[in-house]
Length: 113
Image (cartoon, rainbow, N blue to C red; front, top):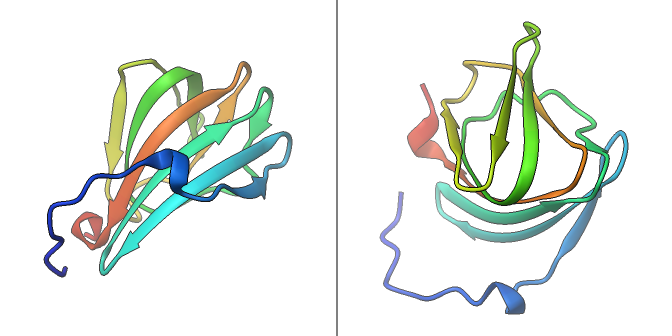
C-alpha cells in the first residue's frame, strides 16, 4: 500500500455514482488509493444488493439501519453506530435496508487472507 499524506475529505464534493440493486438503489462516493478504497454509500428504502459479495470490508453504519445477510442463512442487523468487519473470501454476504441507510465502507489489500 502506498503512503497517503494527511488530507481531509469533503464528501459534498465527491461525485455520487448510482448502482441499482435487485430492488432500490445505492449511491457511491468513492476515494481510491493504491490498495485502499474508501466509500460513503447510501441505500434507498427497500434496497437489496443484486449480488453476493466475497470482498472483505469494514462497514460502519452512520445513519439508519440495514441487514447483512450471509449465504448460510445468518442475518445481522446493524444500526447507527455499529460496525462489522470481514476479510476477503470468508463469507458470502449481501445487504438489505428496509428504511434506507448511510454507510462508510473501507476495503483494500489489508483484508486479503
